Length: 393
Image 1 (cartoon, helix red, strand yellow):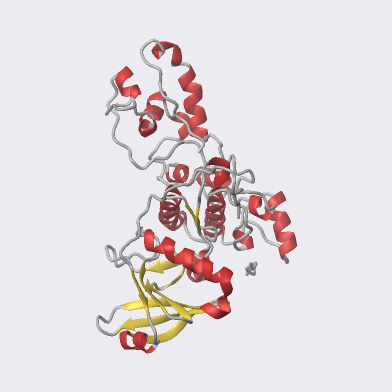
Image 2 (cartoon, rainbow, N blue to C red):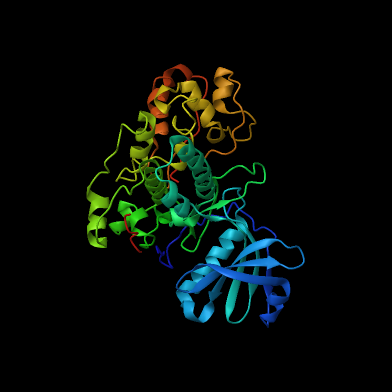
């Protein structure tokens, strides 16, 4: 982890999410839980705990309960669990697993989650490769969830098929691919700004880890975008983008080689998106927000970024262009443009201080407009700096 010198000044972020009203009950006797729940079969396990199916006796509602043994987990893992609980108490998104309750004794922590059916990885092994239609449906949900996390300064750091669950969609019972992103044990809330917010600990599952992490360099939330690209590649082609018989060779392939794209199997927009997510250089890698706007994900109904006009950029970054103390932005004031309210966009500068391709385009086109408007108004500053390897079947 990046730490700061005690004598140095460091700006701290304030979380934009508030904790939900999630019950966290301290218990003296585990018998209390057996009075509430009927514990069923084990549905998952890890080094420090298990996940069991359970039914709440009073309501007959089904849950999945993750049980963490405090003593076998140790101090480091216990800290991760507490951080996971803090994050899950705050997030609320249809495609992120819902933490319902937490019970804690002196020996164990019981995290009560909504019940899902199976992992995407199980479905993938049965039906790979998936069609573009199904892959697009899954990607829209996954990227939407990841963008929501990144917007609130949360980096998942362990996005993989095994951590994507398939759940029942109450709005569409026939939906077989309604997903929930789960397992926030390695997730972290970023602190600081610019370079101070960069991460450094080497965590994740190798086959999904980005080159910058594998090379032990500092990294940002764009490591999650790399993992999204790996999953998309697997969905479409039914194989890993990188494969080797041991971890050492796998790391070398991820860092130094390019995947083999079967261009005859998918359309060109899809290949473009894949290549944009699997760029070795995170400075050039696409962001979650940009993925949501990519022609393949919106089914070619939205023009690409290179076709956008100066007016499009003005509208897009309206929230970054407000005049101090004014209700209208400086572009609308100058050009009398009717700009719709957009409340979900971030600054176009990414966390590692890079300027996105969109903002580069804006700057180049804005330079042609400067002389025309400089005599009317001077715009404020727009930009701020802001383990195991699976076996191939």
